[in-house]
Length: 446
Image (cartoon, rainbow, N blue to C red; front, side, top):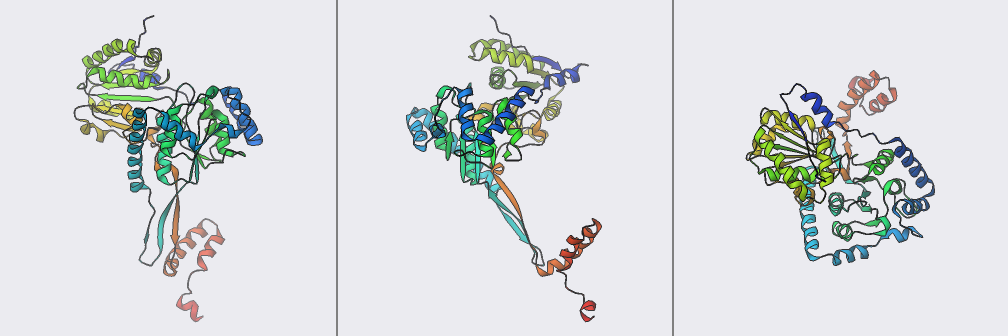
């Protein structure tokens, strides 16, 4: 059977462009009602029965039978054994990637994660105290594929932030443990790890069981059951985001080899049939060349069928009037990954406001960001880059305001607070401020 990958061809000058563009971008984050109900039942059951429920669901969904949760916990010795057992080339790659990810997040912490304070002229101290979360849970997918890179990207910024305990959960269907995932957990400094997954793992982390400690926040991607569970436990714990299908937008001026761009589009399309790969370019002949490269390279890809379905169902090759219009459309899309495939990427970068991560220049393939460039690969999807940021050190910290009002400061602030509190009808607020005011000279004489 000949596979055909036919991304939609959408010239912005076409009268139907807006409707076609909106239809191509549309993706609903709504979860199937049956999934929502099943997840609600699992969460309630784990909250009530704890370990027993987790063991039952792990056997039912992962085909992994265990007499106790202790059998599902990975020891530090096991993690180190896995690290020692993988080929040296994989050990070196893990450590090199981890070092780059750690260095980037340490710089991020210095830039935005430190406490600060200042004093007013009257001696009042105001500031912010930044402290790490006590305990976080990271969810690592483990069904159809294994993702050691997800371990690094979730655990390392938590570690850099100073989180006391990092609890990893990873499903191991039929007990098959991925050595690279375990080795990544060892390299990244995971505190404890359990071979459980799905909604039951999210519930165990959110509510705590006799064995799995309750965490303060859960990060990491998963399937529809995991996403639904994270939404439902939000409020009991924090979460990072609800991730949609992976996305790449390539903004090209026609100077990058077409084969490179075609493969970059493949790099997201191979994730999932619902993944989205879009090219924006003002050069029609170049778009033709990219389509030719897609047709030629597709048969060489092991995941060709998934790529073909993704590109045909959600992909697009958009012909723009110029690069300025391409940048404007990119901002409307607010993609997860944005490649500026140009010989002068810094000319266009100032025009780009919304993207999870921006990859500048022809040599900066998105896949480098996925594994080893340094910045986090957990990024906002489905247009949420308009108001959301990549996972970072700041996601594993919280901020407390510091206020120390001096006696002199209380005289000024107390009067302001009194006026505003009376205006809101909150007399106790006003009186609390007024009690700290010194009597005026006239009042003192009286």
